[in-house]
Image: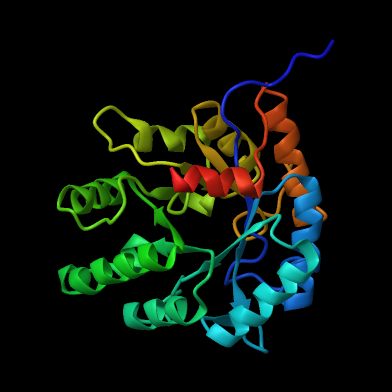
Length: 277
C-alpha cells in the first residue's frame, strides 16, 4: 500500500508571462486574455493553485489597466472557475507611480495582488498612503503578497509590522532569488540569507527564482516550509538546460520534484483557507 503524504500542503503558483518577455523570447508565452485563460487551464491540470497575471498593451508593452485586468480575469474564470486563485500584479517596471499602482488595484478589486515593497514604499513620503492602502485591502478582502528582493527589505517590512502599519497579524511574502546575481542565475543557497537567524518570519512565504535551477530553488523552499512560484516570467529553462515547451511543463516538472520529496500540493481552496488564518 502506498504511503500517504503528510504535513501541510505546498502551494504551487505559476507566473506565465511577466511584463518584459514577448513572443520573440518564447512563442508559447501567453499575452492575450485568451492565451492566459488557456495557460491557466493547462497549469491547473498540471498542479497549480494560483496564477500570477500581467496584462499587456497591444504592442506587447507592460500595462497596468483596470479594464484590461477585468477582461483577463473574466477569461480565466470562464476557463477554470474558482479552481485557481487569480493574483494580479501591481508591478510598475519604472512606468507607474505608487498612486497609479494603488488606483488600479482599487479599481479592479481582485482576489489577490502582489505588491513590491520597494515600488509601493520607495521612501518615507509614501508611508501614510501605503498604510491606508493596506487597510483598504483588508476591508475589501483582497489578499496581498509582498515581494521582497533582499533580506533588508524583509527587515523593513518587519519594522512596519512592529509599528502597527500592517492590518494583519501576518502577511504573505514572496522571496525573489537571484534578481541581482550575475546573469540572473539563482541557486538554492540564495534562500539562506532570507532564513538566517534573526531574520523576520512571515507567512505563508513563497519563493521564485531565475534560471535553470528554478525547480531546485523552489523545491528547497518547499522542504523548508515555504511555497513555490514558477513560470516563464522568471525562467524558460528545464532543469536539464533545455527550453521548456510551456508553462504547464514547468508546473509539471516542479510538481514531480516536490511530490518526489514526500510533500503534496494544495488547491486554490487550501490557499484561501491558509490566508484566512
